[in-house]
Image (cartoon, rainbow, N blue to C red):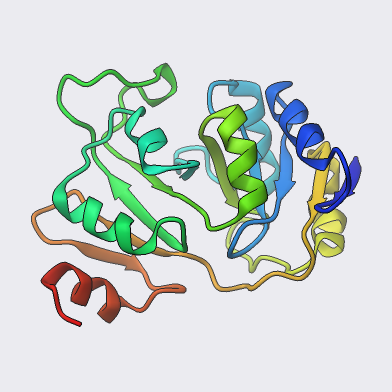
Length: 207
């Protein structure tokens, strides 16, 4: 396992190379540290589940460099989705999106009814995803446990399962807010960095 500080020369290139090679990488985000892998490599995805001890029937969320990159997954981008994306992307908002009927989607999303995704407010990660495309990224912790705020702590608990840790310093331990956009009524599934009231106010046009 290798550790690179985020400001190190070549850290971004090393991250992109490891991900393209099918490795699992710990990356800093604008909320907590995440376990990242390319979604089209089944073995890389399995290693994320193994590292976390996460049940394999629980799908992993996606991070993207932009809303346009998310749209390439064939997701349904409604006016409500655009409203929230314009307000909080990049940022700590995860939206659960359905798929547009008949739209092309990647093979790794075949048979799925929805995918959870967001655009992080984190320059390093955005630059990585501009080269790799969307990534599967889930919090860097054991399933059901809190996410350690430092790379050193994560290395001690998850080190055997990852090839590279990008050290971005101490991070906030508040996760993103998760909002399900599929139904007629928007549902906040997890309140995190963005209060539920702010989400509802944005959708109703309240100030």
